[in-house]
Image 1 (cartoon, rainbow, N blue to C red):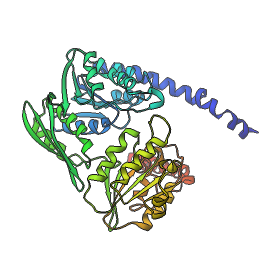
Image 2 (image 1 turned 30 degrees about the horizontal axis):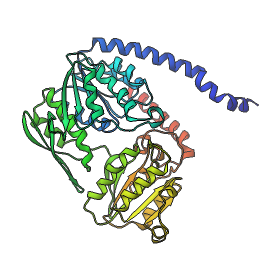
Image 3 (image 1 turned 90 degrees about the horizontal axis):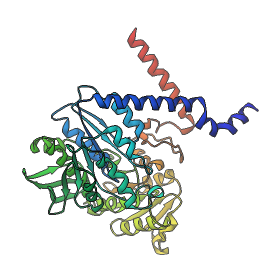
Image 4 (image 1 turned 30 degrees about the vertical axis):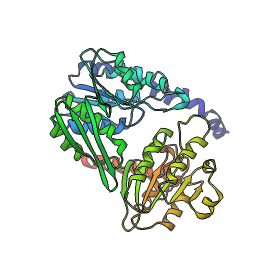
Amino acid sequence: MYQAFRNATRSVRRKHGPRAIIARLGNGLRLKLAQLRRGRSKALHIGITGSSAKSTTTALLAHILEGQGSVYAQVYENTIPQLARTLCHAPSQADYVVAEVGATVKGSITPMAHLLRPDVAIITKVGLEHYSAFRGKDAVAQEKGELVAALSPSGLAVLNADDPHVMAMAKRTQARIVTFGRSKGADYRLDAAEAAFPRRLKVTVSCRKGSFELQTAFVGEEFWIATLGAFAAAAELGVPPALAASRIAGFAAPWNRCGILATAGGPAFIVDTVKAPNDSIPAAIAILRNAQPANKRAVIGFISDYTGGPRKGTALAYDLAYQCSDQFIFVGENGHRARPTAEDRNSGKFIDFLLPKEASDYVKATSRPNELILLKGSQTQHLERIALSWTHDVQCWETNCGKYIDCLQCGMVEVPYHDHRKARKARSRAMRNKGSQSTD
């Protein structure tokens, strides 16, 4: 009876129970403290947003600025609770606070922009993200532009000159505008972007300070946006271009954002498993197309943020990958929507699996040395496990774990899902015991 009551009231307790009330009170107090800390801070506050490249731009800019000052950065988490924590925890002696700012629904950036009160705003690009909430690029641009609108007249906006939605944001501020991109009128003009795995991305940029070659660890040409955006912002903030170039060369690309996971005697994986909006598919497959290895395969999972039905995203991925890969492997329920021909199915050019574990077993059974395999899917699908199964004893193949972090960050990839709770408790006990022993 008691358990039945708990099950029946779970949804209500999650929203209105004691824990939920305490959490809301805690968030409210943290927001007040964050406002107080921001008002007292002497650091330069930098906000970065965009439909893509914002996380990499944030991480790269923070890395560059560390070459000449103290930096406190918020990367990969971009909601207002996390921003409040960042402002509360930023050291008083920090020279720079660099924060990623994200939009999930209409009205989500405005309170973050008012809380951050940025001295510098960087906008990477506008795409069709969170389609169910925004329904179009105009609404996305309106939301992203709130970060620019929050700048004071003495601030700085760093804008992508190639994106008209981004450039339109210049009208929303009296701050100084600096642009980057391929456009001839860009302040930081992209002259060349070359990448063909295993050769990594090299960017050539011209600006009033001269012409510079920026060697990166990225594998795809699309990363020129993050590279050039971070370089432009750093140069405008007084970082010598030579120092910025050196810092860029030493920046390690995030492993699950088109990072490379190489295996001993087996394939190399391009791991792009953080998100898979429809707009990002061409750039991911372009990495495969430009790569030098002779044998290539594409493993594609759930695709989001498309207009119309799910067939559009699946068919786009298949059409693009068909031209540059030996095999297309779809993971999930929508493989049939690619509408492969009977010949492609019979020949093995196209194959689909419902579960990541099935795809992983197939890839292992059919792999060839030195082949290149693209993994592209949403974070909740955790296709990174296909690559990790070559370097770890993957035991967790749960299809709906509900975690929005990667499997390495979770730390439970080698533990069966049904044992996660017990393993987490054991890990917490071990950490508490270690802490108590260190204080004795």
